[in-house]
Length: 231
Picture 1 (cartoon, rainbow, N blue to C red):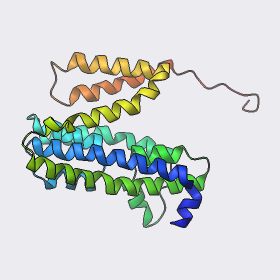
Picture 2: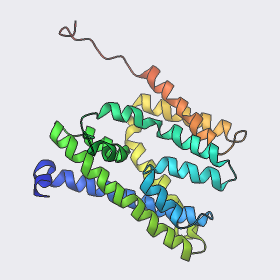
Picture 3: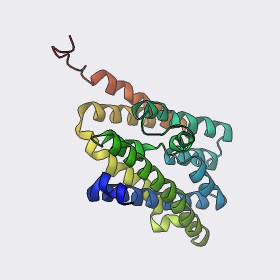
Picture 4: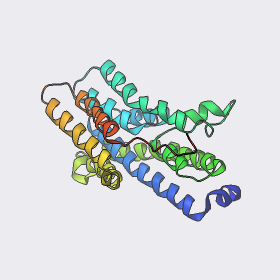
């Protein structure tokens, strides 16, 4: 523990703790929403441990809860989780080797990758990745368990506003990034596609089509300048 403290420092550990606390709160919303939709208490907790990817879990349960095919829900979740492929390419040296590698890959999520990339050197990247991943592994299913218990006791969980926690946290995370023109264009384009297709497509597909907004970001992003040294 002392080694982790020396490596990341007080500010780094506080940042990771804040992220894990937010994940836990979203997990409470997730568990309560799942049980409120009629799923058994154990399902969100099991998915939280095995999948450990909130967006795909929300999408899976949302599609099934609205009458969608479980197969379509699984495929949609896998497509959303395809973002882990570039994640692995961005942090190839932090997931470990040998017997540690499967666990390191399982701990790969938005939070662990983002906080690892933000570190200035390889040692801090590796430490931030593992500490954040372990924290999320505890906070996400733990929050889901608490939320599931709340959902089993409270008849109408929407009265507590738990269903608004997830979109509210996502909005808070997204807003600073909207200062970038390319990112704003991608969000606007993706939102327009999702809203236009929602009346005509099954639940879950409009969200996937919204990913087409990244094409706008790719087109608007300027090419990196070539330095004399690179020539």
